[in-house]
Image (tube, rainbow, N blue to C red; front, top):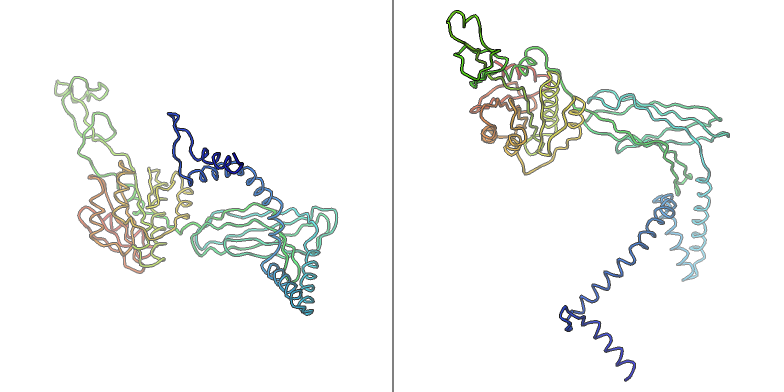
Length: 443
């Protein structure tokens, strides 16, 4: 038997593994190669991870030093040298050598090590829209030798601020102040502070991070609801109920004693006058629980200004409920917000990003009814593009007996009130008029 014939039979046996019954089972050749490739991938996975880790640890930091212009110069030098070698162009070789010399000279500018003590300090990490956000960078030379002038970069959101350090003696400190614009609601990442070494042509650029990034919360603008507006929110839950209780805080009337009644509730003066046991009857009081549903569907708003007005209105109502120590739930299409404290509520509202969505105000009202079934008052904050039909459908989703109000924001509109079935619709045109709008609802 020849060697080729033996090898052929051996491969055929590999392609026909035994089944459970001991008989050869047919296996497609593609399945054999698939199993082989899977086994090879599992065997090579640890080696691949090791190579990837070494690349990230040793090679990636070196490559990150080369700027976009540096890569372009390096590629041009290689191309010019290749063309010069292929066609004998001495000029191309000379240009390639000059490019390589520039890269070598650039290396000298990024070598060396600086020793700084850097402190990034934000006076306040939470400000409202329009308030000033001030911070400082304090730099100290912690080395035993003087340091040459250098540049520090501070990323602030998508922008970058540059601070120029003078020549610093050992132990010398230098401080710079900066102001961050707060014209829009946002979470701005400030930092990390980094020192930069670069050559004059910026072919190579080496940076060292000295601090950790910090978050600056630019909260939405809110207004305090004082006077009758605050009283309105406080008394929304004060509507009398028809449910009676034998033990509560709201006295309703007297009735005859029934076996099983608590004897502590017997009214002894009336009992002595009528010569039969009389007990106090109470009205069942409802725990104050405010729910605010803020629509983040930008299709329901005529402009970005309207959406920001809606966020501010929801925040103002929620903060007033927290001041009054009411139970509060705030919900959007993106889910519930934390509102244990005013800071948590404003932080959550700051992170909100409006976007077109399938779920409209009606879907939001249904989600609110499922998420907060024990709410006593519901505020639905929507945009001007929401139709009365949608508001009527949203009101139908609110459980019976729950006071429901819709705050419909429309930039520049006059304060107004209207009723759609059991829903009170309040039109808000400016945040400063929120107290007036709530007084209209109380009227």
